[in-house]
Image (cartoon, rainbow, N blue to C red; front, side, top):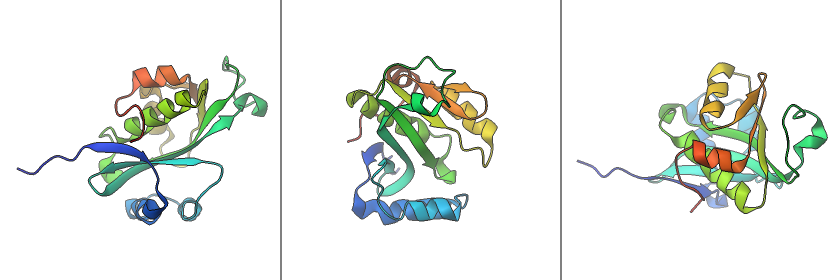
Length: 169
């Protein structure tokens, strides 16, 4: 019987960017404009990857210096004082969805947000495909979802509501 590889969440190393883009492309449900966006580094977002063995199974991009109160989109939340983390995108390869990869990415991101002093983690749901499943995913992770598009929670609420590593290694 083969050894079961452990899932780990790491910050993306530039040498691994081509492998991350291949994972996105191979999954078959990533729009070309999204794929092109990740072919080069971003100064706005930090990228996390979920890795099992040598394979990248998922990715998450987000920032740690936002003030989501400024946009007005999160006015239905009782927002603590900034800084806020903004989760830009989370993506798990279609072959490994529902196996804890997304939850591990959320946990690592929330831990990093807390470490950097962020008081709130926010995001907007991509409703391009299966918004009901996306909403359920974010709720299971501990986010409060308002309407069909915005989600948010304090980092501590997310760390209690997900499984996986607390910080990237």
